[in-house]
Structure formats: C-alpha cells, structure tokens
Length: 364
Ligand code: F6P
Figure (cartoon, rainbow, N blue to C red):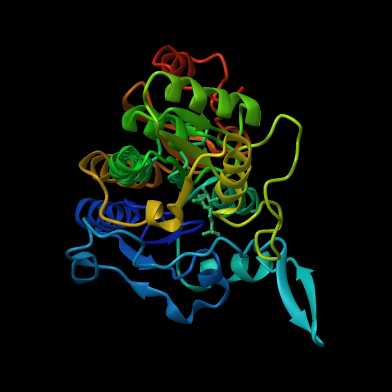
C-alpha cells in the first residue's frame, strides 16, 4: 500500500518546448482541485532538488495565465545529470554522483511523489531515481517528436507551425531572386521536424539524419528544377543530417560535446552546393525559435491531457510510469520501456514515400 499523498513536486528538464506551462497548470489544477494535494514547483530541473532554495508552492495564483505561454515557469536545464554532475574542485572539473543529495532532499521537503516532465535524458534520470525508491511519474516532451513510447510529443506541432511558416516566407523570396534557400531545423538524431515541415511547406529537398545524402543528388534535383523553368529551390536541412561519405559538417563545439552547434550543417551544405551548382545560395538557421512561442491548440490540449493523466497515475500509486499518447488515447507505459530507444524516421516509411511521391528528394 503506497503512502497517502499530501504533497507532490513537479520539475521540467531538458530543452524547453511550447506546452510545458500547460502541463504544469494541468498538474496543479488536477492535484489541488481534484485531490486537495499541495504542489511544489522545483526550479531548473533536477538541479532544483539539489539546491532547494528556489522551491515554491504552486497554486492558482502561480499558474494564472500560463496556458498560452511558451517556455517553463519552473526553468529547466539540459546539462545537469545528477548521476554524473560536473563540479569544480581545486580549479578542476570533476564528475560526481550527487544523486544521494536528491534522495535525501525529497523526503526532507515532504514530497510524496514527483512529476518529471522531459525528454529522453530527463526521463532516464527519473527512471534511475525511481529505481532508488523515489515515487515518480514521467511526462514526455520534446519538439523533436523522437520518443518511441508516445505517438506525438507536445511542442512538435507548434514547432511545425513555426518552421512551415518560415518555409512559406522563404519560398516567395527564393522565387523572386531565383535562389536556392536552405533552412536548417532542429533534429540531431531524428528528422521528424524536417520531414513534416518539408512536406507541409512544399520543400524540394529534405535532408535528415536517417538518410545520408550525396551532394550530387541534391545538385541534380536543383538542376532538374531549373531545366523545367523553376530557378529556385527550398532545401530543408535537419541539423543532424549526414553525408553519404561521412564527411563532417562542422566542428563539434566544447559545449555541444557530440554534435556541432546549430547552423553548422546548413552553412557547410550551402557552401558545397554553391560551389558545385554555381547558383546563389542563402542559408536560414531557425534554431531556438522552434522551441519558443505560444503552444498550438493541439499542443495545449495534449499537454492538459498528459498533465491530468500524470496526476491520475500518482493517485493510483502507479509509479515508475510515463504517460503517453497511443492510438489517440492517453495511456501509460513503464519508464524502463519508454527511455533509451529513439523514434527515428524509417527510410521505408509511408511518410518518406509520400514525400518522394510528391517529388521531394532526400538527396540519397
Ligand atoms: O532536444 C531538443 C533540441 O531542440 C534538439 O533538437 C537540439 O539539437 C537541441 O535541443 C538544442 O539544445 P540546446 O538548447 O542545448 O542548444
């Protein structure tokens, strides 16, 4: 029999995305109104459970007006893994396991259960804390839509609106100036934003991490269009796309650790296309604009449903689970099944074939 819940905590971790505030609001409303629990807002992801001074109660005043707001009122961090936390000692950076502090602080703060809202990294940490006895539930988020255990993550739809709007705008100027426009979108490991915005925006070429490209194929597509009288093209570039020959597209920066910073891929590809095709190229890097803004109605509704469902799991004592969307309905799945496997765009999938049938080249 699980402990009677009186107080729950909520944190948001990883890169922010539209809809986080809608989840926070839904959790606070369902917890306080339906169950009479107290809710504590934990600041800056798991960091807030180590340095607890900014933890504050969340009630109707704190959540008023946040439904349409982008970002997260709780702040977030995509750097601090408490199981391998970089700390400076005697002028040197050493990696330490500071999770025992979190395990001590949770009961000290009177938190009976925790809601962690985040992507794969945040949920993996959640799973480890749950294995060490923390009663918690997860809520999936990421604009990248690359979590395998849920059909769609909130934030993705809003990002698609932002990117599609940008592609529409780039189209008209591309046509006026007879230029090749490259637009770089987020997606280090998965090309969902690129594929769906590329189809929605009528792109000519889409480059994604899952389908390594050849420069010749891109230039051939541009040439084919020119020969049919269309002297402009729009190329959507996922930041994590790769060349068939494995040539790196930019340098890995100190803070990104494994991938180059945003802009590297599209700028490198733009330069290569310009040299080979001898056409005028312009590059637009959408970057963090994709993570901002007011959530779309779809994302707001999904966020509300997931937030309410997370509270439902806690009420039933059903911990170690993540709420998710499956076949259009809200369900839950064990965290251990939900993390570690990214949902990527399958080269033979219907969405890729649809794009190809529309004449879009993947440069492969
Ligand atoms: O995981 C979400 C994401 O938006 C990725 O698509 C992108 O590569 C990354 O975050 C950017 O993170 P940062 O905010 O650290 O630059």
